[in-house]
Image (cartoon, rainbow, N blue to C red; front, side, top):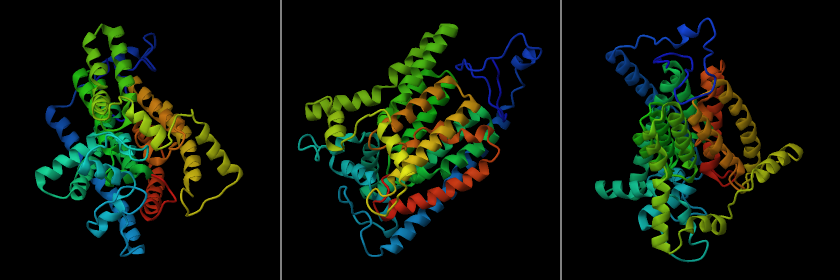
Length: 422
């Protein structure tokens, strides 16, 4: 098995059957010879330095988002920027108002009041939001005595920084520190990274999901299952982690009859199972989440028909406006193009099979959604695609600059109106 730490090129991972070394090649013996491992001090120093780099990249990218929030507040000075087609949110400091819009308001409402148990389809909409984030916000508010809004913003900053650190650690494990540095910059500047400054569950999903993939690569099966369970308690699009754990376990069992690997897929679904069990007791309907999605939000899977139709209509009849959802079709077009290019970058990278499975199924869920589609906020959940260009891409800084412009523009549109749905 190749043991490589702090190298810049992707390595063959023991859970990845892709691109194996040909034993008949002249350099096969050299390729499988283990490299001298760095001492504990050097390795810990590299990781500490990388974590500081990740936090710095996160902090720098937040300046872009906060600049957009301040600009939005200045444009609508005196208005409650958190007001819209979502639950009412407390006023709070001026700089917080643009960050408490959209789904953030739903999460805060759940943290404050809990889940409803009956009512019309519209009243059951909160059931679509998984419980990990509102539980943590409510607990932090209770412990600190702060408002729900303040607790949510503190948690979003901590979770966002944690997500950046976990992305760095994942890429360090799979591709080395130099690639990890590039990857975390791309992740923090990705246009969908505006959610790393808002009370959204995506930072928790990314942090726990990256932790699960690291643990799978290290064959720490129980830890992988626990991380995946936390992710599945945070967001429904963490479900592909369950499949990734299963695939990694199958490969490990076939390769070395490592039956302990079954802990990962056994533990991974506990988050979503726990939430559905709660809904069964709380509402009397174990399928309440599906009914909320279908009847409350009119969401369903159409296998990409709506996404491709809206992207194609943007090509044949280009149109954008500042009205409600006026930029959505343009986002669909950009999303489809981005997915295609990122899949090519992922193919060139050839990461472990578990990473492949998670990325492909996650992006397929976004593309296959009738209303949501591959918008940036959903694509950041497929984070292996976000960071894939950092592995072999030679123009990653150009891409980072383009991402930064997209992050600033998208943040401003989301904070100032309803022309873009996050």
